[in-house]
Length: 244
Image 1: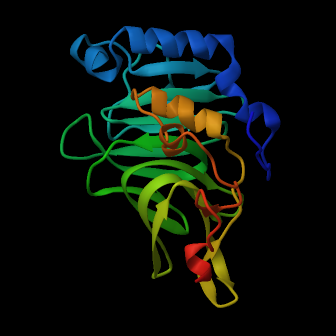
Image 2: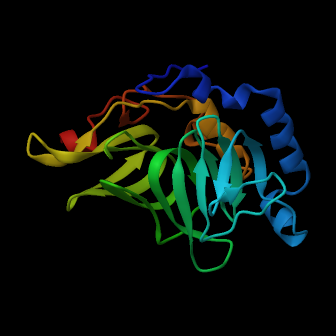
């Protein structure tokens, strides 16, 4: 497995993609035609559900269909992978989030993350956002890791793709090939609310697995190589965009 750095997360949380149950569920999802087939046949869009999770305040069941507008809460042993339209999500333990409606019932316009962490992959499109307590990201087509730490400090990694990141009125256009990371600060650090971060708490392999639920590949899979996972965001050494 590729190098990764933990900060407030456990190794077990990052190894979900290795479980036989998930691998079997992901293979079955692909073989059955993915989201389009599930929606047409009125089947569940949940790829895997483990442990406790709530949907709009009620216990979530494997056979249910998650819709835009729904609120999802996972417990301390909860873990959820699902697909909505052209976006896919891995929801970690102790997470509270909402998926808001876009142009259609099956298109997500906003991932509103209140607590916890989510790995997500988004196909190309306009006017989508990840909204967190201290950071907002306007996304196009990309793979992301988003985490709200205790107290509300927001961590965001543009694993690959193009994203406009904003915190407290400070903005930067992030074009990443390999994990470009940011903090949305609770209070200014060195006079700034949007600051560079290391790449923490997520692996290449789990981003690859979430992308595969959409029958997609990550930027590094397409290029056939990887950079240094230091949060700067590039295959070849370059400064972080906030350091320029």
